[in-house]
Image 1 (cartoon, one colour):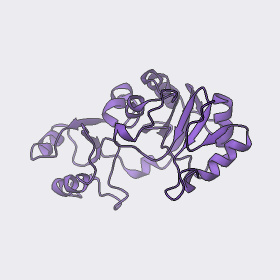
Image 2: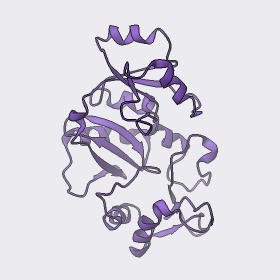
Image 3: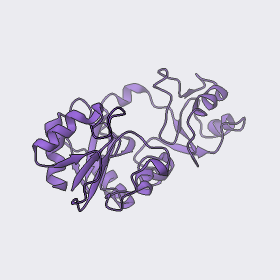
Length: 241
C-alpha cells in the first residue's frame, strides 16, 4: 500500500508541510509515501485536508476509501443515526428560520450548538456556534461562506464545556481502535462497532469516557500533538503494510 499525501502548493512532488513529519516517520518504518499514486501500489490511502466536493477526492479506484465513505464520517447527519444514543442529542433542519426557536423550545432546551454538518464556527470565536448567544441570522450568514452541497444544520443540545474537558481522539484502523495509552472506554468500543458498518477503513472518534462528541474521516483527521509521528506511523504499519 502507498500513502498518498496532499502536496505542497509550491511543489507538487513535495508533501505538504502539515503532513511532512508524519510522512517521514512512516517512510522510515518502510511504508511507501508520496504525492502521486505509484503504478506499483496495489492499494492507496489518502491523507490531506478536508474536502467539500467529490471533485476534490482522489479518483483512482485503488484508494481503500471513496468520497461516499469519506462523507459518511464527515457529515453529522450521516453518522448520527448510528450513534444517536451515545452522543449529544441532535436534530436536523435544512434552514435556520423563524421556526427553529419553537422547535428548540419544544425539546425543552434553552441553548443549542449549531453545526453545518462537519463545520462549526468556533474557529471564528469561542461560542460563535451557540444560540441564542449568536443570533440565527448571523450564524446562517457565517455558514454561507461554505458551499456544502446537500448539507443540513445539526442543532445539538448545548453541553457545558466542562463536561467535554476529558475529550480524547481515538483512531479506528481496519476496525481496530488505537490510542497511545491503549485505554479504550466501552462507549468508544460500542461506537466503533456500529460505525465500522459505514465502510471506512480509517476514521476517528472524539469522545469522553461517557459521551461520543463527534466522528471524523481519517483522510483529514489531525493526529494531535499527543501522538508522536512515530507512534502514529506504527499504527498504520501494523494495519496497512
